[in-house]
Image (tube, rainbow, N blue to C red; front, side, top):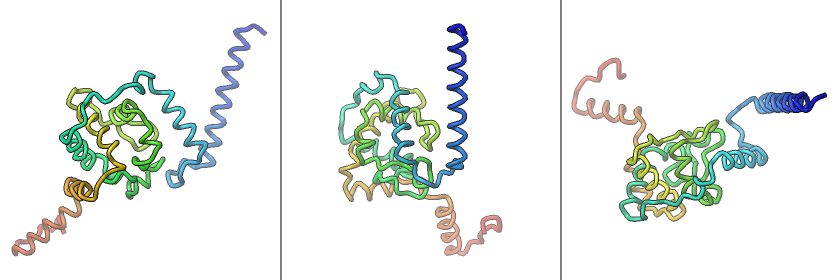
Length: 199
């Protein structure tokens, strides 16, 4: 057998083993989002994510100076875009966050806080495939600045005060059903008819 044939055979066998492992995984988990990923799956996913990022991304430092304005912008962005999954406190303890696979992480904990500024920036801008994390960046300088402000806020999450959390609650978008109910109640109290389509 020639070297080329041996190499081709190794590639085919390796591919077949990977496909078989994938099928066993799919069958064993039924690809359900309900259970928490196991330790091995979590470890492998983090290794793959780290390997996927170029080294220069990991070495990037936040070019936006930390200031009250940067932190305030990051807080408002987090409350508006991130809180529904991650919780305004960053715990991930929301209905949406706990039903994702993997579940939304506690961003105050080491697995997130130990990421470099560049890794956090990249994840926010680009998202992570096969998770619920969307990519929020649009490639503009304004988007990049907003994301760097958000990196500052993620770093601040372990020290979030009760006052800051209360301010964030006021910034968090309310569910549409809640707004609709409130509008219907106001109309009713003013003596207006509520259109049948809204009842």
